[in-house]
Length: 341
Image 1: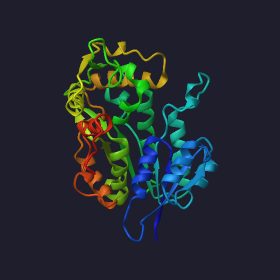
Image 2: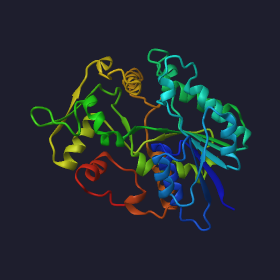
Image 3: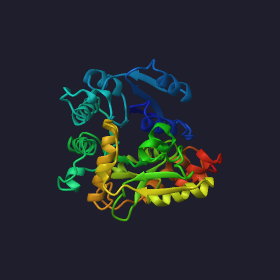
Image 4: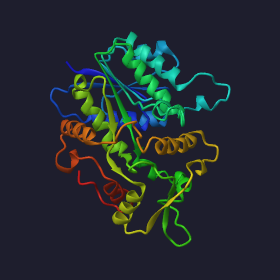
């Protein structure tokens, strides 16, 4: 009998990637049934998701409403959860609840619903890693949620999968001015400039192809959750410096580009946008931690193993089971070439 997997945050980049990968599983009989949780099943995003994934059951629930979550998690063998650090509710200066509060409530609901496998999109603790020098609320809250889920001892498997820097961020034209205009707005000399602080340490920036790789990585975890119980999986497609990333863009597109360092991470202009303030603090955290975005050395061998398992379960082979690189992404998105899948 197929097992029900429920995704909290179904219409988001992470949730939809997970659902798409799981829906492509070609095993017969189908091993999984899929359910997505959204606050508004009638929203354009929810309708688009439902139309793209056959037999997806969409249910309405609110993360702050425990009873609705328990109902949404009912009969689920596994859940994948991504809490939104940039939820508009946190923009309210009078709001006292935190992302940690939200996440712990979701964990409690999953426990009461009898879920066996809990996969959470978590983070390392910036406060612990930097000994309090550069705390980052989004990182620290997600870390606390993951630790809380493990501490319940209620799940047969609890796995933390942590996403790196989305390649897809480069497709958001509104983001370009924050980082010097790259890859859309040339400087006066015609060069596309990526301007940012250094990463720190060996400059190992963990990039993730959210649409192509992340869902397959989580899919791989869900094929063998007991193997990854208690683990922390780095969701990383490609590891390189920001300078190398820009060089890959030049190779892929033939367009002139360069990296320019912002010497002090505090000088990154974020225009008062809360989500971008987190990005600025991320640079500070990484510089203080010696580039250790995950609190330990960055690696993607684990992600490659999981990607292969998830992709093969979807019937992929060859390049289709390999993690994407920045050059492949830029060729596809900015030079009109496919990834070879």
